[in-house]
Image 1 (cartoon, rainbow, N blue to C red):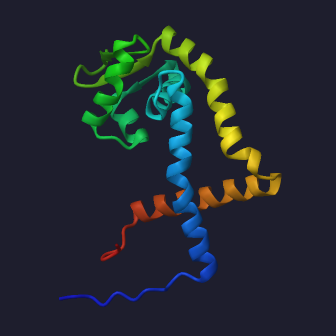
Image 2: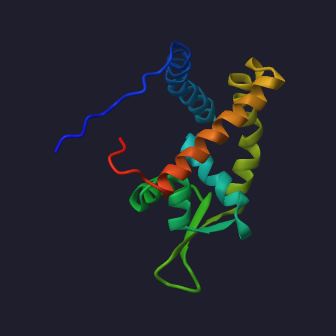
Length: 163
């Protein structure tokens, strides 16, 4: 049986906001990515280094890292291969459970992150925050926190038939 979908169409203001977001999000990520390539990193590589640097003992179960990065286990393996080959991340079996792999930030990885972080922060500042006033930064944090909370709530309580 086909269900009739009733749309609550976007207002003109909502449509303008949505189109502005869609129009900028890809360009913004691409620009930040280009800035990182000068340091021989992708944004995905950088995220791995950051998450491992913030983890307890700068190590994390690979399945947990994959979840945070929203990658499949094989996607994470592909992402880590270059970082492991470069000596920035190590992979080893968990001492507690040999079925579990642990990713760890190496001292070379920490050094790379420490060298790259100031350039990345400057890129984000130049491409995002230099164009916003203090109230807009607060609004941005509030907006994306509300969207993230809504996504988390809908993932935890999916509605039948939701698209």
